[in-house]
Every structure is written in C-alpha cells, then in structure tokens.
Image (cartoon, rainbow, N blue to C red):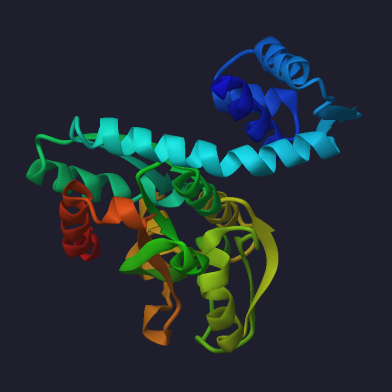
Length: 284
C-alpha cells in the first residue's frame, strides 16, 4: 500500500506516467497497476487523463493532501533510524555544484570522516528542497534557498562569485555597472532569486534564460551571447581568469547553503559534517 501511495504522490507532481516511472525507477505498467490498485481499494477514481498528461480527481487530490505529510514523516524516521545508525549521509546537491567544485569539497571532507558512507544525488535546487521536506534526503547543498528558513535549517557556507563569460571569448569593452544583456539561469532556479536584485542594480539585463548554468556557459562560449554564470562553472569549462569579467567585488554572488530539517540538523553526525563543509567550502 505504501508503494502505491508513493506512486500517486509522485504522479501528482510529474503529471505523466512516463516521468513517474522514471522517478521511481519502475515500468509504466507498474505505475498503472499501482494506481489501479489504489482506485480499487478506495473504490474511487483517483486520476483522469487529459491527452498525454494525468491529473488527479477531487478524490485523488484529497488523498494526496492527507497522506503526503504521513509519508514524509515515515521517510524521515527511516533515515534517522537506519541511515544515521549505519553512519550514512544522503545528500541532494545542486547540479552546477556537483559538476564543478563540489566533488573536491566532498572528497576533502570524506578524508576527515572515513567511517561515513556518502550517497550523492544531483538535482536542481528546488528539487533538493522538496526532497528534503519529503524525507528522501538528509542534507542539501544548494543555492538561493531563502524560503527554506521557515521550515528547514538553512546556513550559508559560501558566497560563490558570479562572472561574465564574453560571447565566443572575444574581448569585451565593458565596465561593470554599464547596461549589458546576458544569458543566465531561468526564474524557477534557486539561484535566480539570489542574484536578480543585484543584476538589476548592476544594469545586467537577462536577455535569454536556460535551465542550466553549464548550458548558459556553453552557449556563451559558442558565441550566442554573454553568459552570467558562477565562477566554478566557468573554470570547469576551461575559461581562464583573464577571460572572465569578475563581479564579486560589486556584490554579485550566489549563496551556497547547507540545508536540513531541524531534527536532522541537530544529530551529531550531521553537525560534524556541517562543520567540516562550512570550514572548507571557501577553499575549493
């Protein structure tokens, strides 16, 4: 029954059988069978199809609203009783961090915690926060999560400088503070809210947006426009210090945050991990 409810909750978020199957790592047929089993058990229609997408009926919506908090608590209990007891930390990490300087940071920390097993998941920051709240992850390392402070512990561990990659690496006659159109991250990302105001202050106009900072950087390198990205992304792609326009001195940074549920953050293993991550994040 728990697997069936988990499937319905996931389907309510993804909206398609295919995406639900991908998230849960099961077949689409298994997704359909689980939903059908729930409908038979409750003697109610829980979903209806609208073209290729699936939406919840009134009964499906009420069921998801009631069981989601319970499922979250069950996952959280499982993590505390099993993962922590075994000395394991399950992390959700922003994709741009895990694809740039994150692995160096975690390798350094792991050397100081050889008895701990780490399980990493690369996700967009909003997904990391959702999965922390749902009890799937123990800790998140993500960006721009100001809203996390109401129900999660959220501590800034690093201010990562933002830089401009000139289009096609061509020399750019530009002074910081002059109007400039750039390609950068889209509005749903965690980082956007943390840089939007400073971009406006520096007269940087978002002309085009993409879902990934690495995509932004690659488009800039290919000559599609100037790219505004974290310094770690630019360095990972081989952009030299002299080729970037640095904006940290003008206050344009993205905050990198250590995020966890309050009860999880208080556990000794997580506290030790936090202290090491916080101490070393500025060195990578």
